[in-house]
Each structure stands twice: as structure tokens, then as C-alpha cells.
Amino acid sequence: MSPRDDIPNLRGQDGEGSVQVQQDPDAKIEGAKVFSVYGKGGIGKSTTSSNLSAAFAKMGKRVLQIGCDPKHDSTFTLTGRLQPTVIDILKDVDFHPEELRPEDFVTEGWGGVQCVEAGGPPAGTGCGGYVVGQTVKLLKQHHMLEDTDVVIFDVLGDVVCGGFAAPLQHADRALIVTANDFDSIYAMNRIIAAVQAKSANYKVRLAGCVANRSKDTDEVDRYCDRVGFNRIAHMPDVDAIRRSRLKKKTLFEMDDEDDIIACRAEYIRLAETLWRGTDPRAPAPMEDRDIFEMLGFD
Image (cartoon, rainbow, N blue to C red; front, top):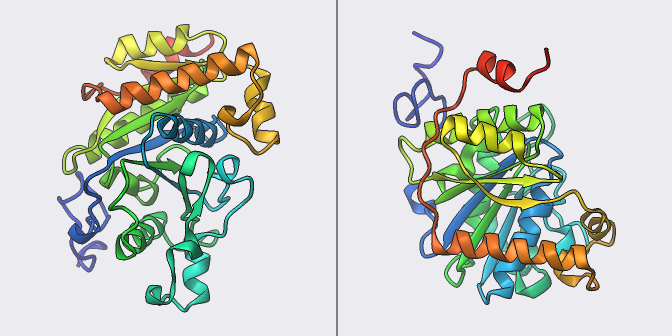
């Protein structure tokens, strides 16, 4: 018997060589546009996700943001505080979801954005895919997805395992947050490969990338031109964004300043672009050696 022979419902069903269980058909998110936000650790995914959620809310959309990170800090600029995680809450009721009410695990944030922190398994144990699956299942059981226009998954780090690629099973489009540097673009290249693998069996497609915390975008644009990808937003490295995090607020709650007004406008433009719908992108990720040759140092 091979090491994988005793694992059910895996081989050939979720990408070549996959060792993941497919999404439960009953957990499918219907009726909302679903976006998953990825990028290198520390690149600003939560800042992007929260301000994007706020931008959708400004457009009059009903928004649900799901943080998928054990740090459970995805939504704190929307709510002003850290929320308990779904997994911790389920643990408190011995994993009997029928004992929970929506207000036990959903907090209303700025602009009416519904905020959920899925959390993650204890360090070194479990799988992030299980956490995501349980969160979506719980939301469906409590009918929290029926009156939602937009769902945003904010997912930790770059995609290096199937567990944290699980939101791609639900998403219509994947959005990558990057910066104008080698490490961020290298991570983006891996994420592109992960999304392409998922797209073989799920509806998810790539929307584009956001150049974040970057004065310039020349390296991002050069990479996109090379692989057939596109940059759909640019958030410059301005102090106002850092201050908004310190104040536990989105940019939409901050006092008017030129930088803040400009960034708000860019987030609104990004939200409008995503809402209208982006052409599905199918870039060809580069080999590691080719990225080093294109962007690395001599």
C-alpha cells in the first residue's frame, strides 16, 4: 500500500498529486462575489482586505470579511479590537455549533461589514483547510451568507500548503498583494502557481495584483508583462496607512488628508473594478531560476 492509499477522496480530484479532501458541496457559497486575498507574510493583506471591505461598504454592498490567520487580526481595524476565533468558540461548546448564535462569532464593523476570524489550528498541529471549512459551514448553518453581496477571505502568508489554499475552493477571484521587490514577487509567483492548480477543479481565477507599500511599480510591472498578469491597483508607501493601523481604523474613518483621500479613492476604484468583474487571468508562473535572473542581483 502506498502512503496515500488510505486517504479518501484525494488523488486526481484537486490538482495533480493533491493530498486534500475536496470541498463539501453543501459548503458552497452562493449568491455573493467571493474574493481571496493572498501575498507574502507582512505585505499588508489585512490592511488591503479591511480597506477593500470598507470600500465595498461605501458602495452600498453587504460585506463579510473572514480572517484566516491564527493571529486573528484581519478585522481589528474594522471593529477596533481583536475578536475570538471561530475555532476557539467552537472548542468552548465542545464543537456543537447548534449551541452558538451568530453574535457569538460575528462582529459588525465599520460600515456594517460583518467580521469573522476563523483563526487556525494550534502551532504544529491540524490543518488550516479544516478551519476554513468549519467556518464556512458555521456561517451557512446560521444563514449568514444569504444576505451578503461580497465575501473577502484574508489568508495568511504565501500559499505553501493545501490547507491555506482552501479559500480558493470558494473564491471567484484571487487577488495578490505584492510590493516592488524580489521577495514579494517571488511569493506572488508561487501563489499564481497555486491558483492555477486550483482552477483546474474550481471556479477560482486570478483577478490581478495590488502593488502595496511601494513608491514605484516597475519591477511588479516587468514581472506581470513577462508572465501575462496585470496590476489592478497601486497603494503607495504613505505614513497615513501605518497610522490608521495604529489607531485601529480603516482609512475611511481617518480625518481627511491628501494622502488619505488619495488612498481611499484607489480602494474605491479597486472595489469597483472587482465588482464589475475582471477578465480571468491565466499567467504562466516562472521557474525559480528565471525569476532570479530577471530580478536578482548580479
